[in-house]
Image (cartoon, rainbow, N blue to C red; front, side, top):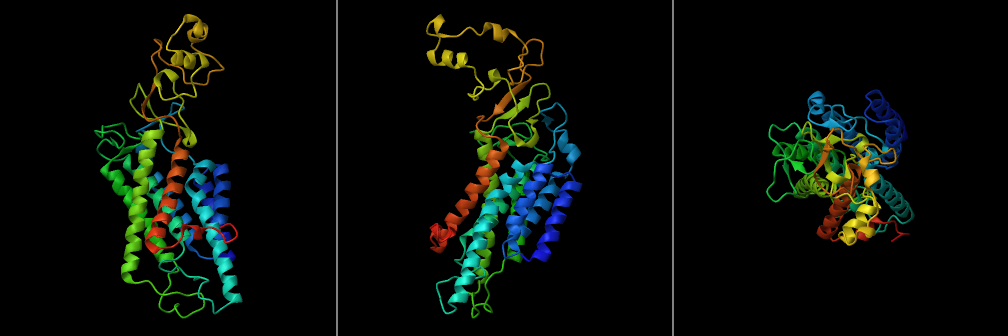
Length: 382
């Protein structure tokens, strides 16, 4: 991307994030580094997709923001809703695309140098995007199609008239709005729309090889109409599938915590775990005391085998215990786990989905095109 375009564009992107309070200071710094990683690419595509995702994602986040804030509860006790995103959330969505963008920029640079050194070579590759060409481009588009579909599905799906259904349950039981793994037809449709926006922008900005470039240095055969349609449909479906995979991962490995008093899902700041009492979260192993683990393993064999925890359990407040304490006088828990194993937080799920689906898209393209997946690595590494 040309410097005279990249520099003001990055500055405008960071200023908008600051003025709209879309990102925290750490999030703005991470966004700046991400934008630079995309802008060094000679094509406009990576940076443009980053901008489209940021603007579209920010827009849907603010759709009926006041209504969405009342559908969940914040971990601090206030109304729910999405606050400014931090650096971890920025990287969870864009780190994979940043790495792929830098790798592809390096490949294009080396390819250009090889063409200059040997213009008659037919094995160097093209500088435009050809059918059966660079897998990394597929990975970049797939990353943003998936995270955009997930963002649209989450931010708009919660506004569905009907209650969401838990995608990981055998009977698709109804769950509170905001539950990890909860899906609705409206939310799935919104995810499809998010994927379509990214893929449409990609097709408008991709420097596809044409019949005119076929005879030029670094050119290749042009795309047929059928090939373009296949690419559009394949990437759109893959982005939609990414939002479904994110729901499955969240429903299985991310604990959804429900406030007992309101029946609403508790949201945390920055996508981290919500604190909940160990007694109400049987899937949490990290928060259990040594005595509890020993008692569970020994199944109560001998009274001397278990440490005395009576004194500690009698205290309602322990400054060294960071787990959520009951707010009811009768020791009933104020928060319970609705579903999911407490293994990952929201940022972990988003990153795993984005990375896995991007790699999966490149693997499918590798198989369909007959291009070695190792071609994504630099020559000195491969």
